[in-house]
Length: 246
Length: 275
Image 1: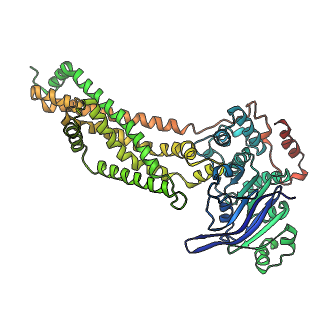
Image 2 (image 1 turned 60 degrees about the horizontal axis):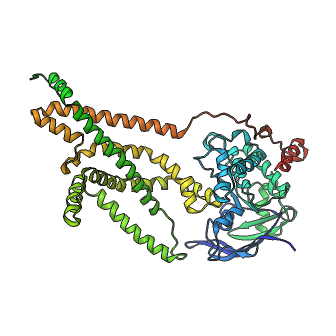
């Protein structure tokens, strides 16, 4: 039997009168690399933020290993420690060094001893190639480096699934390369990932499942081959037109 | 008796130097301690004002917090909206009249200045917390921190740095404003100057000294706080930790465009077995 880490069922989200998400349905299994693509404003980021409870869904439900995360007694902090998130704007803690950024979750949230936390943090910082920068403050490194630290910070918590909210959208092309490279390697290692991205090549080559969103609904979903080579829906074809021409 | 301005100043300094010094000491003690306590009050009030509440999720907490906030708002508005000199009289004589508490000079002084500073700092802290990018809070939440942890480890340290200039401002204002405490008999710098002036009718000379002493105090404090601020910011330059025993050298590995063709990658990730 497949292990459903996350199941999204009939999810809806409205901001005031604006309907941002409607009847969203999809499943993330262990080991999946799911890419969510679509035009800006189609609700991709909101969906991801709902999954991490940074936004409260208006209707529908999200199940984590079969348990609704919107139940009254549900502890969002404990859940978030297992479902990591990487943001477009990095959101590194400006008052801490790179190493402290990666250790704080371990020591304060998981209650890991300082020495062990340092080892774990160092392991993941090495993985993203940021080990030499451990004593540096976030304001002193480049965007790509920040994002790699942010990924290390999320990985240090050893999450079941890692959400990426347009991780490369705030970076220049060279930095995009270094961040995607890290993500490719993570995907290869079997990390469960849910990625909102505009990097079509990444979605095509790395993901195991692609979700195309338009106007707050899932327009089409399937394997990368299905979506990129034989899109069924007119909107999908239109959206991918530009990418294919390049 | 000395005749000229210079002679009179010298005479005062020789005979009443200690009086001025003691006055300056009292002024500084009240200003520093009260600013500190005021900051703590301000932080507590400011934090309570920024606790997020959801009426639908926890109505009891929502109602309770609402009530506390109303009380705190009244506190802030009343103490910001009335002169400290009047507050000093009101509290000092009010405590004696209504509650039969005879506050001694120190208690009264610390109490009045602290509670006044607290009212101003509450708004400053609230502003400081609001000035921190919401991304910081989201980053903290995303690794599983609760509201308290987010505040203590992420938001407040940054808010504190941002409001340091305002804390300095408050300290300087307090150094100057302790002089209103003369109305309840606190023997600080202004009171001392006045007594010396009264003894010889040398008002100009005596208050010239007071001016200089007040200025030295405030100027020193503002410079010291600047120093503290730059210390909080840390150095601009940084060293790479390549010699760190845990770091090895793998961090320097460059990524190639295609991991499949890159032999480095395997070595790079083979470290997992070490864990």
